[in-house]
Length: 137
Image (cartoon, rainbow, N blue to C red; front, top):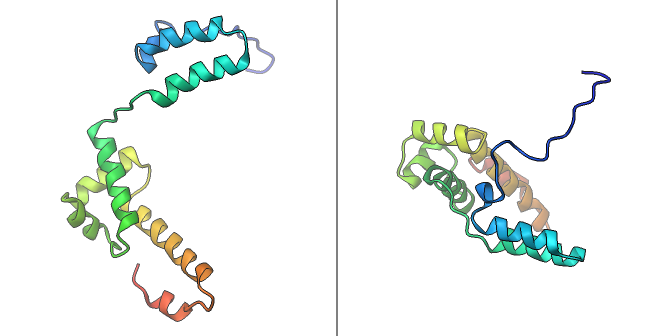
């Protein structure tokens, strides 16, 4: 692929402005093209990207809720604890995290607990390192 020139295509074949961002995208594209100043273009794009409602599939919402559960409850130190808290099975959580989070639930729990452990001594005037080491998780 060295020293090879490929012409750039204006877009993906069959894609329209409304295909990825909803029906307001075509109106926004016209507004951006007709805008005379950069600020007007930015305002038109902001209205499209910020004001639009986002709907996520059920599995994505479940993965986000599981991660929020890990974050909110420091007592969750095992995947079985997370399964009990979310009402699912350990296996279902593993599949959910593999597909939508990109890591395992065990690794996600460890990362959250590690961040909590790092925040503790930084916030205390005289950190209790022995207590930190004795804490599970």
